[in-house]
Length: 303
Image (cartoon, rainbow, N blue to C red; front, side, top):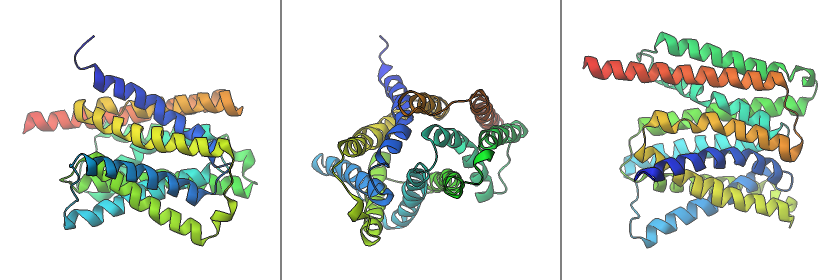
């Protein structure tokens, strides 16, 4: 066994773990109101990470100039992104939610371009964006017969906005360099976003909808421990030891895992067109990443 097997094991685990979270959310949201479901999860996971750094004497707060950008990006990622996903999954299948999230890397590139208009986007990456959106169009085209279902359409719109919000938060975080550990930064973001979501949930009366359903609490526990704490730690660990392009492979595997689990446990229908559409989207994502990777290499060689 090679000495550097641990980063690859972390990446392989991440590919499965984050693919299972769509199913866990779909199961949990049947028994939990959305704001408290997400809020409690991120308060606990964020608090665990903060306490870990506190007791290992590695707790280092971000500088004043870093704190506001850190919080804003965290709200976009965890509240605007994950919470929107939770709300959307009240109406849309978990597999569809996963397929919509395959476009996340494409939205990253689009938001980055909007943020820095002077940055050049390789022509091949533009082609990849177009292919990716053709795949996304095919995914949602299949849902057109449900256009009369207002709740379903609203769920789809919220789902798309959630992906865009996550992309905005991720680009914002990347643009603001941090002097603290990425895991600690994530813990701070989770805790603050979780507190805000919980406060909103309490003031909106969601506490009256809480119950002692075991399935709901188990899904909450799974998302907190496995999805947030372990999954995010694996992500940062793999990113630290492996090239970013290699780590990005999780984005290709997650939707496949999510669609399969939705079919296996929730009897969600998987049509041939949906599988083709997802494949086209992932192909577009691959072309985007390949184009950007080659552009970076050429830039380094020329410099």
